[in-house]
Length: 97
Image (cartoon, rainbow, N blue to C red; front, side, top):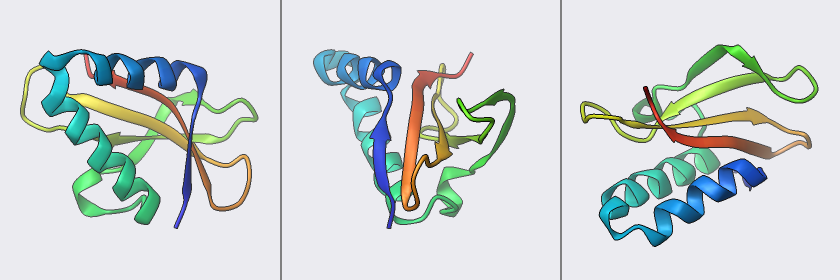
């Protein structure tokens, strides 16, 4: 199991989802994604893959996980392993362009 750490930016995205009643369905999808990340970052439904145009603060590989699929402006979770063992740092929770 991994502990999930939200950066300040990710925390702002998370808080925005929590207060906007119109985003309740997306909040549930992101919660599920974070749970799967914690349990198994390679869970098939996350469709995790490296996001090569972005690096972590120490050059870590950044990954993209799907929170939603087949809906307009689907939400994605961007994250990397670390900085400590058994820790995943989420850097953004955002709609895909």
